[in-house]
Amino acid sequence: NTISVIGLGYIGLPTAAVIASRRKQVIGVDVSEHAVDTINRGEIHIVEPELDIIVHAAVEQGLLRATTSPEPADAFLVAVPTPFKTNPEYTSHEPDLTYIKAASESIAPVLKKGDLVILESTSPVGATESMAQWLAEARPDLTFPQTHGEESDIRIAHCPERVLPGHVIRELVENDRVIGGMTTKCSQAATDLYKIFVEGECITTTARTAEMAKLTENSFRDVNIAFANELSIICDKLDISVWELIRLANRHPRVNILQPGPGVGGHCIAVDPWFIVSETPEEARLIRTAREVNDGKPQWVVDKVNETVGKYLKENPDKTARDVTIACFGLAFKPDIDDLRESPALKIAETIVATHPGQSLIVEPNIKCLPSGTLDSGSLVDEKVALDTADVVVLLVDHKEFKQAAVGKTRPDYLVDSRGVWVG
Ligand code: SAJ
Image 1 (cartoon, rainbow, N blue to C red):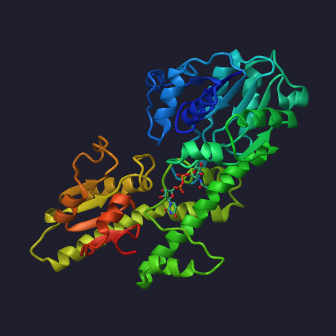
Image 2: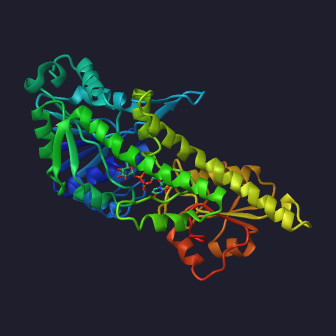
């Protein structure tokens, strides 16, 4: 049996490689020539621990091959992005299904009776039905579950990915999978496919429930992070250490508060809750508020930095704003990764670099050069240089290097620590 994975990004490529490592023939499809060429050389275009070894082995053994145009296969796994469209007034966030539609239209011509199509992309409720509809419109000669139920030629299911970036290879295999078939036979066919590499349990449900389950998981985390972030703002006002407070409250047997930070980044938790809000705006009040609290946190940190620079200038009357060196520690969206996409730390650093008249230093041990553009007037330096020369230190990501650097050192006098590394 040949399995085709459509979309070779952070989810698709590891999935394709893990399936190939189980000695199945896998055809990976991506619109990016660069991604396809890199993979066919046995290399990878994204960063994820262990992925390079698995891809290299799979390509070398002839089990994984990448292409830009879909080929016939027995199962198609769609793992393309589902971003949201923001309207200019920032009042609504509509899910953008363009990539799913394009993927459906590209595989439709090679579909044949008996094939299975699985949507893995995190999707708003109803997206699997839309995908089935796009496939049906492109292939009137085949039958689909929405009209022919169990008798359909094509089986369709939604099986959301749930892996944590940085731990993808392990979680792909170990996590339980929620499998939402459009019919029972669809669920069964999808379960058979996941059994190839999943050691966790495969639990079946409807496509709509599977879609909502994924959105619920990420909204749960977003709401809980928002609670921690709101506490950090309240504690700052009340002159209480939020880190100590959370440690104490978490001593209660039924309390488990998450950690505050500079905001919520990544491509999932800051996006998926909007898929619920946009569908049920009147009802999803808490979920919307959590998004707003977390999205407001970067600006709060920037305000704190400005306040701290003001304090420095007041206490050092011989200095002007131009003389102040600010060091930003961390750009990634979470600790110990190099992923800067949708990162609140990056956004804060960009604002500081753009608005601060003095020198801005950036410390990010996981990258070799600064992304071109908005950080051009900042300099990438190591922790030691930054700590020795900065007048104001802004801690944005709790990378292990920063935690180590903080041990036994006195806390910088002018510090905004959004992660509690120094002040925790
Ligand atoms: N964060 C905090 N405080 C915390 C925990 C996280 O500020 O206590 C921040 C992080 O710094 C980061 C953001 O939240 O900016 C998201 O990080 P994360 O580690 O919570 O999650 P992601 O985005 O890397 O992965 C999530 C996971 N979902 C859940 O844990 C419910 C993962 O399992 C999903 O597969 C992934 O989203 C996805 O693809 O949807």
